[in-house]
Image 1: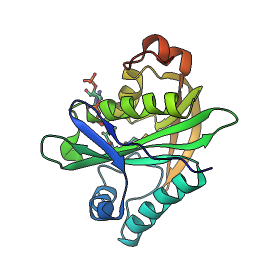
Image 2 (image 1 turned 60 degrees about the vertical axis):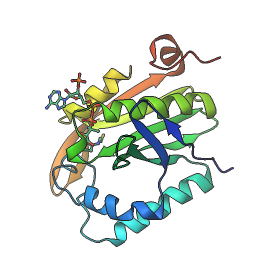
Image 3 (image 1 turned 120 degrees about the vertical axis):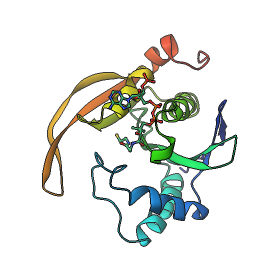
Image 4 (image 1 turned 135 degrees about the vertical axis):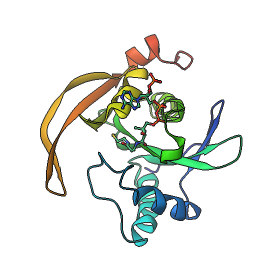
Length: 190
Ligand SMILES: CC(C)(COP(=O)(O)OP(=O)(O)OC[C@H]1O[C@@H](n2cnc3c(N)ncnc32)[C@H](O)[C@@H]1OP(=O)(O)O)[C@@H](O)C(=O)NCCC(=O)NCCS
């Protein structure tokens, strides 16, 4: 069962399905070592990785496992990053949240604003009960984004990743539908 990727509008951002036209932006984003500092794989060196990422985004929709959305700034139309809901499990009514933004766009609340819209869409349209996210324990900014959205830190995955020989721990965060309804930034769900 495929899933229709949404177009979402927030006060400052527009979220739309990732497309082939994003490949250049995505390559620049994912080859930036600072951006990928806490990522679970090394920075890209080959432009083909960006094309594969776009192709995988299409596949996710077709398989019905999730959506990846490019995030544009309304004021100038610039693409600033992407966010995703992946690993959608319709039986468990669960999915995972992910995001990545260009350095120039950090610290303005964009990641939180976009994720809030996407998570709200996912709870409503995919009828989720739980959204999960994982982040490197050193990634303070990402943990803060999740906590601003109401995610609860549920535990530590010890030595979860080894990237370029460096062993790192991850935190697991979860946001339940009832908590989103109670305290989430969007309007209450029916
Ligand atoms: C993590 C990331 C998405 C945050 O994006 P962003 O648009 O800057 O996030 P926001 O502005 O919505 O929120 C960031 C919060 O972290 C805080 N923060 C950032 N760096 C921090 C630091 N070093 N120490 C403490 N707090 C920090 C900010 O102050 C802000 O919190 P506040 O609103 O309470 O002030 C962005 O840095 C990014 O794309 N990083 C690279 C990719 C990545 O790590 N993705 C997540 C993988 S799990």
